[in-house]
Image 1 (cartoon, one colour):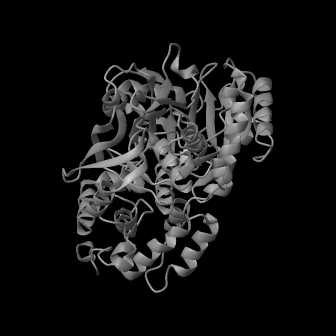
Image 2: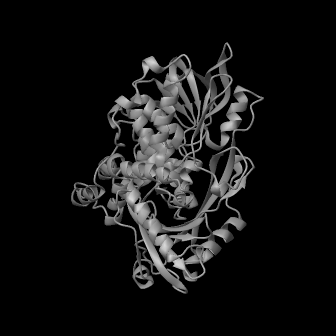
Length: 536
């Protein structure tokens, strides 16, 4: 049998379609002057780079870590209208969120977004009554033009058939509504790919060590490649600071006297093995403003989230024992104890929401996007929601067009003239892709299992066929990475050659689901590192 040690170094021949090497990308970044340098490879920076490249600008994007390596892969994995915003009267906001959610899930990335039914349990003595929540989910579905059905109320017995671990003690009724779900790291990565397809040049694991100035204006950045220590620089007519929780750190490099512009809210989540299948998610009101989620996700159960002000170093954010206890305690309002055993926890993660600076409870703060211009002309963008990532990209581009002196306006196509719903790479019906993988996947290589076919189809869309070809060409790559996960070794080779994976964490935490399943063993990590090294 072929072993992974004998896997050829894919991507050593131009015909493989591999990405440029890091050295080639650094040289490309160093030699040109870009219209726009985006610092920060979270979804705000990625979306802006994508839209800027579509508009015809010469775009560079760099990140100190991996793409979506921080907050953008630490979300609740939802594309949603924001049910809780209704009670604050933000009807227009909910309608706008629904519009973006539907656009992403139906026209932009139907291969990466999944419809998800939500059950909102109404318990005796809870913060909301059945009539209020019934009216709320009806209004919520109306603002989505009833695209996910009509929000309504069902009996506890009916709900428990779909959610067997639903706690029914003192349960009066269950309100029903629809939203969508995704793997945020995969969605971000496909958006990076879309930006590159549109002409952007990108490099992860490249940290900014300083800014470049010309006559007091920010005109680029000094960088260090964290993979080998190489120092280089990028020149740009305009620099966009999209570093999320680090936005004020970069603003200090522009102007040491700049005042803080944001505050941070920490959101923690737990991932658990499921004791039984779930056909719907739970959204349980904790108080007037907060909801706790129990979401079937990646064959697991995702619980969360917390919401508390965070004042430490963003790099140090982590799930504490207090977070774990709070999430399990709040989940226990509606989830049975056997599903909440700590023995079932496979992974935990925390991210930082970026909120506009100011007083008040973070749980009530608006998730709005703020674009500011600094003393040296650097633009900083912060805040927002995953659901509206395309809208945020367009908003930043409109801001660029309106800058004093219009430095980029004459070189860029206005957003209004560009297609409104450009699809992400791999767009396809995932059911059709999975069917084809099962029918064609066994010729001439080993037969693909149904769960692997389904996983590939819903994480890569039609790009799954590239991975299937790798598996067919080399039987070792058709083997599962771990017997209890659907992923195969061809995905590791593909991540290395086509998806900018540089480290084992890039592969195991963000290109695949091994880490969140608790299956990233030392042996697997070592084998991944060996396979990554073969391509260098």
